[in-house]
Length: 292
Image (cartoon, rainbow, N blue to C red; front, side, top):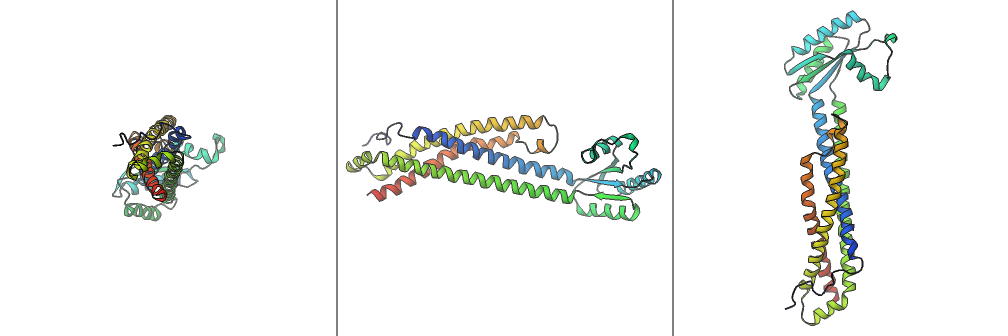
C-alpha cells in the first residue's frame, strides 16, 4: 500500500551523515576494550601459570667453599623430590643479568658475594611438592632461600582481574553512550519529519510501519559505523602486536593480541547494527504513542 517502508524519509537529513562516524568511534573504542581485555587477561594468566611451575633457590653464603657444598646438597635434595622435572644452577652471567636491574653493572674488582641461583622446574603447581621442597631445604641447607613466586603470581592475577573489569566496564559504558546517541538521533529525526509522519497517519499508516522505516535506516547506520570502527581497531591492534613481537618473549609480548582475539571483531558490526535498530525502533514506537 505504501510501497517501500522508507520512502517517506529522505536519504539524508540534518546531522544524519555524521551518525555512522560517531558510531564508528564508539565501536572503535569498544573493540579496543574487548580485545585488549581478553588479551591482557589471557596473557597475564598464562605468564603467571608459567611462573607457577618454576621455583628458584638462592644459596646465600659468603664463603665460596661452603656455598659450593650447600649448592650440591640443595641440588641433591631437590632432584630427589617427586614432582621435580629438573634443577639446574644458573650460570654466573645469568645471575648477574638478574641482579643488574637492581644494582647496575658490578665491576669485577668489587668482589661482592653473589648468591648461587638454582632454577627448579616442576611437573605441576601442586602445593604439596612446593611445601616439601621448602621443608627439606630448610632442614638440610641453612643458607638456602626459596622463592616460589606465589606472592608475585597473586599480584599478577589481581592485575589481570582489575584490567578485565576496567576494560569491560569501559566497553559497557561505550555501548550505553551509543544507545543514547541513537535515541537522540531518532528524536531529532522524528521532529524533522513530523509533518511527513502526520500525513502517513492521516492516510492510514500504522506505527509499526513508520518504526520500521527508522529501524532499517538506523540498521544501515549501525552496520556501516561498525565496519569503519572495526577496520580502524584492527589496524591499531595489528600495529600493537607487531611492536610487541619485536620485544621478544616477555610480559609485553604475552599480553599482546593474538590471531584468535581478532574473531571478536567479526561480530561487532552485526552487534552494532542490531543495537541501533532495536534502539531506534523502541524509541520511535514510544514517541509515536505520545504523538497520538
